[in-house]
Length: 223
Image 1 (cartoon, rainbow, N blue to C red):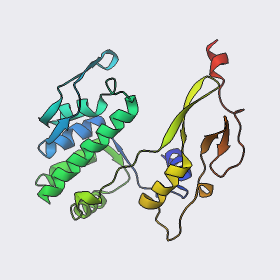
Image 2: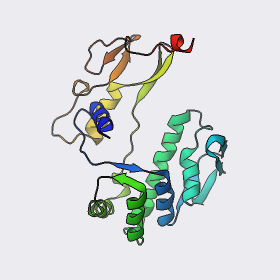
Image 3: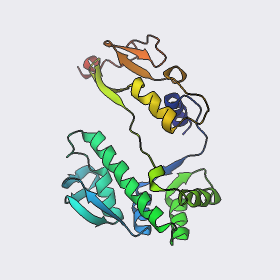
């Protein structure tokens, strides 16, 4: 968690608060069931079997009611998207927005005690039950239009035979200032600490030359 906070801090340009939550997949299933399932328009046919996990995904395209297990199949499917993981991320974000809209339409959660029990059992967090209850109450005061999802903008590049996803600063910095900047002054790429790909080489977000010496040579490693 400390390393994760540090790396996210490098992305946004400031230190991240110490509160965290690690959500187990079983919690995801139970939370969806706790709110009565979710009505959702599945974007494509999703049929896949993951043998090493004995996990079957079997969803047809179209508008339908998803319980927790079906919702888990939806958010885990990736093989049928033309843009692979990015397609799955878009569907995950859209589904979570549908969950939020359903909860906000109710403006209350009849099963709140059960929901808190699920969080306590299946979510690893340093938030107290009182913290979580407060955050849920504050969440129910907002409108769905106040919820926004962002995907880190970047480009795929090959370095020494390895595939990397490099951030596009000209697109990322405005997102940080629009959605994540808690200060009254704008942040810049110089405040952040990540690597970018320019003119066939690697630089820091602040513009300093970094090079590729520290990158693993995949071609040599494989051979």
